[in-house]
Length: 216
Image 1 (cartoon, rainbow, N blue to C red):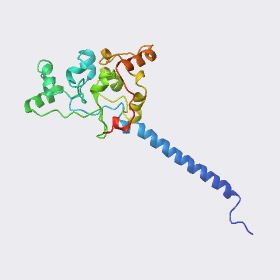
Image 2 (image 1 turned 30 degrees about the vertical axis):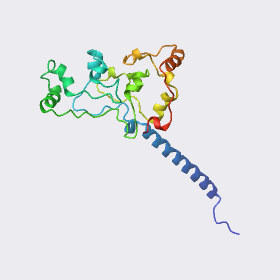
Image 3 (image 1 turned 180 degrees about the vertical axis):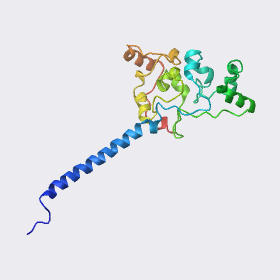
Protein backbone atom coordinates (compact mmCIF):
# COMPACT_ATOMS: atom_id res chain seq x y z
CA UNK A 1 0.00 0.00 0.00
CA UNK A 2 1.28 3.42 -0.91
CA UNK A 3 2.13 5.75 1.97
CA UNK A 4 -0.16 8.77 2.43
CA UNK A 5 2.48 10.84 4.22
CA UNK A 6 6.08 11.50 3.44
CA UNK A 7 8.77 10.30 5.90
CA UNK A 8 9.35 13.92 6.93
CA UNK A 9 5.77 14.19 8.21
CA UNK A 10 6.76 12.57 11.53
CA UNK A 11 9.41 15.20 12.09
CA UNK A 12 7.03 17.99 11.16
CA UNK A 13 4.41 16.61 13.56
CA UNK A 14 6.91 16.42 16.43
CA UNK A 15 8.17 19.96 15.79
CA UNK A 16 4.58 21.24 15.59
CA UNK A 17 3.68 19.64 18.93
CA UNK A 18 6.78 21.06 20.65
CA UNK A 19 6.11 24.50 19.12
CA UNK A 20 2.49 24.42 20.33
CA UNK A 21 3.60 23.50 23.86
CA UNK A 22 6.24 26.25 23.90
CA UNK A 23 3.73 28.78 22.59
CA UNK A 24 1.20 27.84 25.27
CA UNK A 25 3.86 27.98 28.01
CA UNK A 26 5.15 31.33 26.74
CA UNK A 27 1.63 32.75 26.65
CA UNK A 28 1.01 31.67 30.23
CA UNK A 29 4.39 33.08 31.33
CA UNK A 30 3.73 36.45 29.69
CA UNK A 31 0.22 36.57 31.19
CA UNK A 32 1.67 35.80 34.65
CA UNK A 33 4.33 38.50 34.30
CA UNK A 34 1.76 41.08 33.17
CA UNK A 35 -0.61 40.11 36.00
CA UNK A 36 2.19 40.58 38.56
CA UNK A 37 3.64 43.65 36.86
CA UNK A 38 3.03 47.34 37.56
CA UNK A 39 0.47 47.55 34.74
CA UNK A 40 -1.93 45.57 36.93
CA UNK A 41 -0.63 45.99 40.51
CA UNK A 42 0.35 49.68 40.15
CA UNK A 43 3.40 48.97 42.35
CA UNK A 44 6.02 51.77 42.18
CA UNK A 45 3.59 53.92 40.16
CA UNK A 46 2.47 57.20 41.72
CA UNK A 47 -0.99 58.22 40.49
CA UNK A 48 -1.65 61.82 39.57
CA UNK A 49 -3.09 63.82 42.47
CA UNK A 50 -4.82 67.22 42.64
CA UNK A 51 -1.85 68.35 44.76
CA UNK A 52 1.65 66.77 44.47
CA UNK A 53 1.72 65.91 48.17
CA UNK A 54 5.13 64.83 49.44
CA UNK A 55 5.31 62.50 52.43
CA UNK A 56 9.08 62.97 52.32
CA UNK A 57 8.72 66.69 52.96
CA UNK A 58 5.98 66.43 55.59
CA UNK A 59 7.15 63.31 57.44
CA UNK A 60 10.92 63.20 57.06
CA UNK A 61 11.76 66.89 56.71
CA UNK A 62 9.08 68.39 58.97
CA UNK A 63 8.73 65.45 61.37
CA UNK A 64 4.91 65.24 61.21
CA UNK A 65 3.57 62.06 62.82
CA UNK A 66 1.31 59.79 60.74
CA UNK A 67 -1.53 60.27 63.23
CA UNK A 68 -1.64 64.03 62.77
CA UNK A 69 -3.24 63.55 59.34
CA UNK A 70 -4.55 59.98 59.62
CA UNK A 71 -6.42 60.61 62.84
CA UNK A 72 -8.59 57.48 62.93
CA UNK A 73 -5.91 54.91 62.14
CA UNK A 74 -5.59 53.65 65.74
CA UNK A 75 -9.27 53.07 66.46
CA UNK A 76 -10.97 52.59 63.11
CA UNK A 77 -10.88 50.32 60.09
CA UNK A 78 -9.91 53.34 58.01
CA UNK A 79 -6.79 55.45 58.36
CA UNK A 80 -8.74 58.47 57.17
CA UNK A 81 -7.93 61.16 54.64
CA UNK A 82 -7.18 64.48 56.35
CA UNK A 83 -9.86 67.15 55.86
CA UNK A 84 -8.93 70.48 54.35
CA UNK A 85 -9.02 71.97 57.85
CA UNK A 86 -6.00 69.85 58.80
CA UNK A 87 -4.05 71.13 55.81
CA UNK A 88 -5.03 74.71 56.54
CA UNK A 89 -3.85 74.46 60.14
CA UNK A 90 -0.35 74.86 58.67
CA UNK A 91 -0.92 76.29 55.20
CA UNK A 92 -2.89 79.28 56.37
CA UNK A 93 0.45 80.40 57.80
CA UNK A 94 3.13 78.87 55.56
CA UNK A 95 3.10 78.55 51.77
CA UNK A 96 -0.16 80.47 52.09
CA UNK A 97 0.18 82.11 48.67
CA UNK A 98 2.01 79.35 46.77
CA UNK A 99 0.39 78.13 43.56
CA UNK A 100 0.96 74.50 44.53
CA UNK A 101 -1.28 74.90 47.58
CA UNK A 102 -4.01 76.81 45.73
CA UNK A 103 -6.32 73.74 45.58
CA UNK A 104 -6.23 73.66 49.41
CA UNK A 105 -7.36 77.28 49.63
CA UNK A 106 -10.02 76.68 46.97
CA UNK A 107 -11.33 73.71 48.93
CA UNK A 108 -11.37 75.74 52.14
CA UNK A 109 -13.24 78.61 50.49
CA UNK A 110 -15.81 76.42 48.73
CA UNK A 111 -16.27 73.79 51.43
CA UNK A 112 -15.77 71.09 48.79
CA UNK A 113 -13.39 68.27 49.71
CA UNK A 114 -10.21 67.71 47.74
CA UNK A 115 -10.67 64.68 45.48
CA UNK A 116 -7.56 62.64 46.21
CA UNK A 117 -6.82 59.51 44.19
CA UNK A 118 -6.55 56.42 46.38
CA UNK A 119 -3.15 54.75 46.23
CA UNK A 120 -3.87 51.69 48.38
CA UNK A 121 -7.31 50.85 47.02
CA UNK A 122 -8.53 47.40 48.03
CA UNK A 123 -11.46 45.79 46.17
CA UNK A 124 -14.90 46.21 47.73
CA UNK A 125 -15.03 42.50 48.60
CA UNK A 126 -11.94 42.76 50.83
CA UNK A 127 -12.26 43.81 54.48
CA UNK A 128 -9.24 45.41 56.11
CA UNK A 129 -9.01 47.04 59.53
CA UNK A 130 -6.10 49.37 60.23
CA UNK A 131 -6.60 49.54 63.98
CA UNK A 132 -6.43 45.79 64.63
CA UNK A 133 -3.15 45.49 62.72
CA UNK A 134 -1.54 48.41 64.57
CA UNK A 135 -2.72 47.13 67.96
CA UNK A 136 -1.27 43.71 67.15
CA UNK A 137 2.18 45.16 66.40
CA UNK A 138 2.16 45.52 62.62
CA UNK A 139 3.83 48.79 61.69
CA UNK A 140 2.91 51.27 58.97
CA UNK A 141 6.06 50.60 56.95
CA UNK A 142 5.34 46.85 56.81
CA UNK A 143 2.61 47.57 54.27
CA UNK A 144 3.37 51.10 53.08
CA UNK A 145 7.16 50.91 52.92
CA UNK A 146 9.48 53.86 53.52
CA UNK A 147 6.75 56.38 52.86
CA UNK A 148 8.89 59.04 54.55
CA UNK A 149 11.18 58.84 51.51
CA UNK A 150 8.42 59.29 48.91
CA UNK A 151 8.24 62.64 47.15
CA UNK A 152 5.07 61.24 45.55
CA UNK A 153 3.10 58.42 47.14
CA UNK A 154 3.04 54.99 45.51
CA UNK A 155 2.49 51.36 46.49
CA UNK A 156 5.49 49.22 47.38
CA UNK A 157 3.50 46.00 47.84
CA UNK A 158 0.88 44.40 45.62
CA UNK A 159 -1.68 43.90 48.44
CA UNK A 160 -2.70 40.73 46.62
CA UNK A 161 -4.15 37.88 48.65
CA UNK A 162 -0.98 35.79 48.57
CA UNK A 163 0.99 38.77 49.88
CA UNK A 164 -1.41 39.22 52.81
CA UNK A 165 -1.38 35.50 53.56
CA UNK A 166 2.41 35.48 53.83
CA UNK A 167 1.97 37.55 57.00
CA UNK A 168 -1.19 35.88 58.26
CA UNK A 169 0.44 32.46 58.07
CA UNK A 170 3.52 33.57 59.97
CA UNK A 171 2.91 36.89 61.77
CA UNK A 172 5.96 36.43 64.01
CA UNK A 173 8.33 37.48 61.24
CA UNK A 174 6.58 40.83 60.75
CA UNK A 175 5.46 41.80 64.25
CA UNK A 176 7.19 44.55 66.23
CA UNK A 177 6.70 46.17 69.65
CA UNK A 178 3.58 48.35 69.77
CA UNK A 179 5.73 51.31 70.70
CA UNK A 180 7.40 51.04 67.29
CA UNK A 181 4.42 50.69 64.93
CA UNK A 182 4.66 54.35 63.84
CA UNK A 183 8.44 54.27 63.53
CA UNK A 184 8.88 54.35 59.75
CA UNK A 185 12.61 53.66 60.11
CA UNK A 186 12.17 50.60 62.34
CA UNK A 187 14.58 47.75 61.61
CA UNK A 188 13.81 44.21 62.68
CA UNK A 189 16.43 43.09 65.20
CA UNK A 190 18.80 40.18 64.73
CA UNK A 191 16.81 38.20 67.32
CA UNK A 192 13.46 38.61 65.52
CA UNK A 193 13.13 34.81 65.39
CA UNK A 194 13.04 34.90 69.19
CA UNK A 195 11.25 38.23 69.71
CA UNK A 196 8.51 37.60 67.13
CA UNK A 197 6.92 34.52 68.77
CA UNK A 198 7.16 36.24 72.15
CA UNK A 199 5.22 39.28 70.89
CA UNK A 200 2.70 37.05 69.10
CA UNK A 201 1.93 35.39 72.42
CA UNK A 202 1.92 38.65 74.38
CA UNK A 203 -0.41 40.44 71.93
CA UNK A 204 -2.63 37.36 71.45
CA UNK A 205 -2.05 37.34 67.69
CA UNK A 206 -3.82 34.59 65.80
CA UNK A 207 -2.77 33.10 62.48
CA UNK A 208 -6.07 33.74 60.69
CA UNK A 209 -6.25 32.34 57.17
CA UNK A 210 -9.92 31.42 56.81
CA UNK A 211 -11.88 33.17 54.06
CA UNK A 212 -14.18 35.04 56.45
CA UNK A 213 -11.26 36.96 57.94
CA UNK A 214 -11.04 39.20 54.87
CA UNK A 215 -14.13 38.36 52.80
CA UNK A 216 -17.25 39.33 54.75
